[in-house]
Amino acid sequence: MNPLNILITEDDTVSALLLKKALEKNNHKILAIADSGEEALEFLEQNTADMVMMDINLAGELDGIRTTEIINEKYAIPVVYLTASSDEETLQKVVGTNPSAYVIKPFNIRELNMVIELAIFKDRKEKELQKLNELLEEKVKIRTAELNEANKELQRALEKEREINELKSRIVLNVSHGFKTPLTSILSSAQLLQKYAQKDHPFKAKMAKHADKIEASVRTLNSLLTNVLFFGKADENKIAYKPGKLYTSAFFNEVIDVVQAGVENKVNIVTKIEKLPKTIYCDQDLLYQIFENLLSNAAKYSKENGEVLFKVWMEDKTLHACIQDAGIGIPDKEQAQLFDRFFRAGNVGIIEGSGLGLSIVKKSVDVLKGEVTFKSEVKKGTTFFVKIPLEK
Image 1 (cartoon, rainbow, N blue to C red):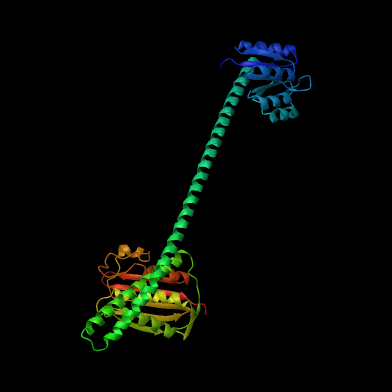
Image 2 (cartoon, rainbow, N blue to C red; image 1 turned 135 degrees about the vertical axis):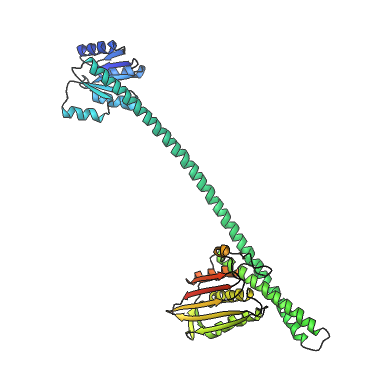
């Protein structure tokens, strides 16, 4: 062990000299001998010591224990107690000041050296631990500040994204609404052309043909805009559930008539309506979105002159539907993406579509707290199953 600079605080002269002699024998340097706590503190204000040997029972106002408490508060110096008493009360007082060690008088040199070594080792480890704790606290403080800053950046980014999404939704809604009016005018004009084409005219056939094309194109654009408006509302969480009484036969006949009127490949929709009450209580607009899109897709992706089976029935206060086609089917590896917005399977070829229909179906079913599933095989067709719980 390296030599230490030691301050002895002992009011008994003989004991102090014996201790000084024992310590110097082990090459330690005795800086001074203080006979009171006050003198010891006064010395430490002007000098630096590696260790203080402290008698517990000192004369004066400050005993060894109180002096040690002050040393602990003001200086990072290990203190070794000297005591002639080993009673429990004294030991409890000693432990309360967290001393580096203590020596019971009378002591021998071997024991004294061992105690000093342990005291220095304990003091060094405590200081290392304190340094590590301070370093850890500093790292935690820095990391916390970094996390707070990162969180602020994330909040700013999320707020910016929210503003952009709101702006995008407003633009989409405004533009879509803006298209609606001219499209309605174009559709009216096409229908007038069809009416005029019924009269004798040298270009009667061509007029009827082009009027039909205009009407079909306008209906396609109108459907696309309707879908875009639907998702504009969905992105703003404005799709409200508005249930009401609807007449089942009239509702499903309307859906089938609309879909059948838009069929261009001469597909026939075969309807089987079973066990349905005269009226049901549900959101008519959302139901229309579900069945119109499913039937339109089934017809669009069927073969020329093919057949689509549309079956509807009621079971346990739940509306069930099955839409089955024998069309192109959906590749296995793409089925997981089927309800994603703007997704179109790789085998659709030149068949037109926006990739929004099935996304609208899924969103509408979710709002109605229902379920939509499907099974499909390429070149053999697809079957969709819909379940919608009804309130009444």
